[in-house]
Length: 252
Image 1 (cartoon, rainbow, N blue to C red):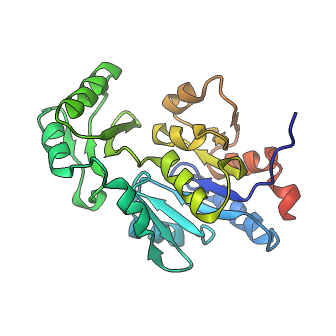
Image 2: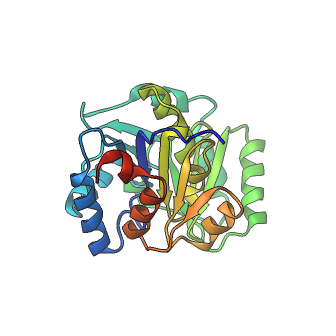
């Protein structure tokens, strides 16, 4: 068996993963600050848009990340440089027609649009209560028939995101890894809901499903090499980091 590569990046969802149990969040912050300067890069991957993600991270006392992947993998922000990675935005444009996406989705009377602050050029977001697998398949077929190259991400039994093919949490993470010169097999990821499936199952990564993970995520990772933590939220993240040897290499 080949020895696992050193962990060079920690990528985590925010809500329900890093946040949700305040004491565990404080513990994670303390552990992070105890790590030596050679600690991995820290990346947040969230459904929140950039400004909202940075605001909640600061308000809740999360460690300062190196990058933020926002909008369910549709935007990437370099925190140290203070700038969006526009080259990723250009990747998303291929085959994407936001106006046509909205027309197709809005034709279904069961689906309601999310507020403007949840939307942007490459993220069409909606509420669809209790959508079945068959209904989601029908929506994908309708988008294809309209000539739109898009993917449908559904989570929490309500939240519907229609994204460019190059988006989602897994694809955006892989793209970022290429930009910083590392493989996905040097990354540990963590999440709690259906839109984290791509983050945990991206080939090569070492995934963590926290103890409060939604049934939809647990079903998606069943039988896969994903660590199932017992601890909820940040406690489960810390449990997973320990499992994957992060503390041994970072001196915490």
